[in-house]
Length: 290
Image (cartoon, rainbow, N blue to C red):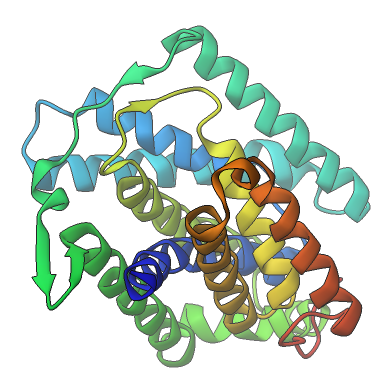
């Protein structure tokens, strides 16, 4: 039974590892913790609803396209005008943007959750001994590993990836050697938008509805994961996000019924203990902008 909980927790942890990667990439380049990132996941959910009559490949491509465009508009209209401002100003901007997108979704789609048809193919269960492993868990883990490998190759083997890495190490020096900050930051938002779209499809794959507040809880856990993993370190962010998702799933499974309502309290108590021991996170980033 306990091994079954571990398998389920690995799937959830992989999803949050992806989420924190998108947050950490933007933070590494421009020092922005984008709290509106959860709303990109929400936009992806509503995109799935709007495209539900289309073939599966059109749903995937359409959702990625919509979320990437939304991510680019965030960068161009909300964050670029305040890029030279203080970190606090950018943080407040991200909060304001998150609230604006939530209320816009509430007006456009209504206050009540919109029903979402489940992808029944993903709920198929494979039996391995005493374990039940869903197809969604397998796909989530495979996709998470694939995205991490692809991002690693992009950062190490491509021109824009090298520019991104240079900017994460020392953004001011990168500008001095001719790297165009607008292009690099826009690229970071494109990549994080693709990741948000993928997270959205995996997150809503077996859920029954999407609402204007759907992105709130997932971005909070991902943010805390990025903090305990190490702000500015994408490896640390992935590890922190995985551990947060893993721990959250285990707490909800293992706590007695009367204590499960306090699962969040137990989780964040663990986070406080980790940060007391490792204030800079599990993996501190060299040159991280904090």
